[in-house]
Amino acid sequence: MFDLRSIVIGLVLMLKKYTCLNLAIYEEVNEEDYKNGIMVLPLMGFAIGFVAFIIVSFRYIYDSFFISSALLLYYCLVTKTANIKDVYRTLNYYIKPANQTEHIAGIIGAVLICLMYFSLFRIVPVTSLIIMPVAGFSNLIILSKVIKRDSNNTSILKYCGTYHIVSAFATAFLFAAIFYYKLIISLSLTFMLFALSVSILDKRVKYVPSSIEGFIIEISQVMFLIITYIMRL
Image (cartoon, rainbow, N blue to C red; front, side):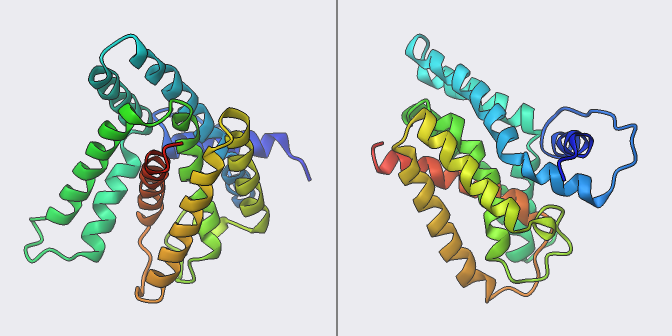
């Protein structure tokens, strides 16, 4: 049943988790609120992407390096680098350093993500920046059907149901069709390649850390931008 109160609370929960907006909740939160919040994740991604689209549009006026720097700064600030930190944690979780004080794999991964963003922001179509966060959040939800490991440690994957997946698919492709229909190709390839890779890796790992969600979001977004550039869309 449509429950506006639960949806609003769910949205606030997602904003607190994935953005710099730290809104207070004066209502008691339950599991259903969280599930409803997952439904609006792609829409939240659209809002983040739309502001990025406005910023990157100025690259036709100002130097593209400056705009890429400003856009990367905006992305890091608005997301609190939460997902980039999850890339760091996930790589260190699976690639055990010889010395526990030298988390070199995580450091390299986080730096590479930032460098890829800085480079790709300059060369991809401006409309792809709208779809990028939508692709990241949508792919996280979609992969809940592919990952078979125990996901009780996660905060999103364990709550995703069939209706979340259908909604994520529909929202991502709808936005791509509205803003630049050719991006449907990038979205489709991103979803398919990621699902194939995760299904193979899922058989080889025993545990899924809580940080895997941010890792999936960031890698999905970078993959989407790379495919968009390679396909010359």
